[in-house]
View 1: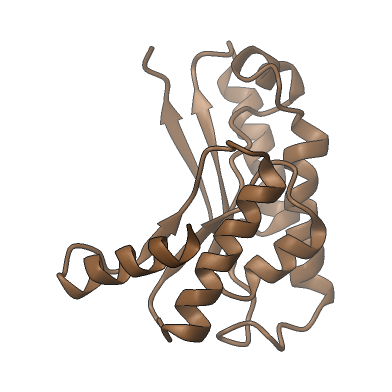
View 2: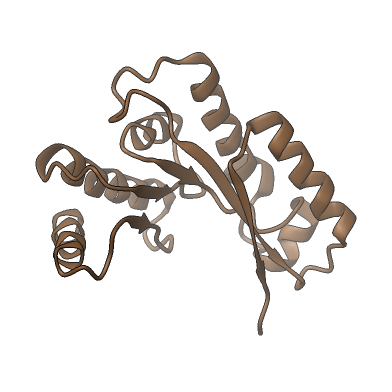
Length: 169
C-alpha cells in the first residue's frame, strides 16, 4: 500500500541504503489502479513526509491524462517504457501491449503538459524530465529502427535519456 511503501523507502533512506526513489510496478490490477497507487505514494512522500529528494516515477500503460499530470507534480523524472521501436516489434515482446494507444500516446501527453501547461503545482515549480527504455534483441529489431525512433523521441519529446536493456532469456 502507498503508506507502507513511503515508510519503507524513508526507513531505507534514514539507514543510508537509498538516496532517491525509482518507483515502478507490474500492472497487476490494471494500469489505472497501479498508477493511482504510485501517485498516492509520491503524494505521501512529498506532502506529508516532506521528502525533497529525487523521485523517478513510472507512467503505467493505460494511465489517464489527469493521472499523468498529477504524477508529474511530484516527480523529478517520469518515464514510460516503450520496450520496442514500433508496434510490430512490440507485438513480439508483449502481445497484449499496444504501442501507440497505451504507450506512445502517454509520451505525447507528457510533452503536451510540459509545453502547454504551467507547473504551478509541481513540487519544484518545473516539470520533470522524461525518459523511456527499449529492450534490445528479442523482437528482431535492427539498429536503424532503434536509432530512428530514438532520434524522433529526442527531437519531438525532448527526452532526457533513453535506456537500452539487453534481452537475456
